[in-house]
Length: 246
Image (cartoon, rainbow, N blue to C red; front, side):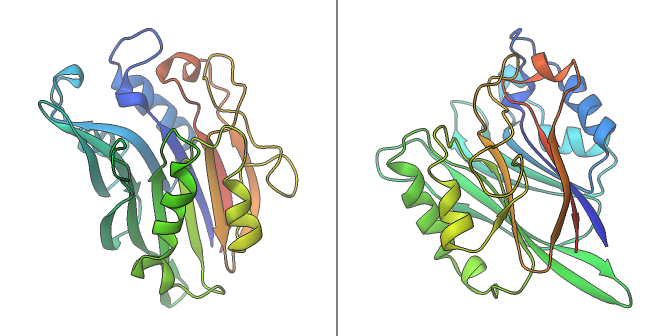
């Protein structure tokens, strides 16, 4: 079966013009009509975003019947974190804490999606993460992730997707997935990991912070970054879109 995945750090739906406009995010999601949407920096109950649950708001606007939220950062009022929106049922979910001592709270939202596969159901594990800003943090956070029971229980020949905002400014985390863990990078120009789609800053991107990796019986049919005009202002990141075949 074919599956489209979109990963997007939405910056709480506050654009580079400092305006809270969730309708811009919704318009971008509607244009690409992905089966699975992986969002980072999603506010829930925060005054700056009208105290909305942005996961619920965007799921309803995009007609996604299933969604999960993993809140990581506690604010004076409300929290924010990651959200996964899906056209398919979510069989399991867990928010994995990737926070290191003395550092900003970070997390990875694990969901297991029930995909139709002929007469049977295919379970697709999806890890939606947002790594830290410091290079010293990120390898430790990846190490913590791959030691979780959710990750270690997945065979190397089974399908798996890891995506999100890696904050991988100098492309040093990507080889941990492609070389050490046997993943393919779906958000790269050509084979490998050294020529990533540029996604940050959105108005004039110079680095590829937002990535999608896949492993197992998955073929990458194609990938791209968003080039819609509205995406240059809707967030400080551009979304990436990948088409996969399982």
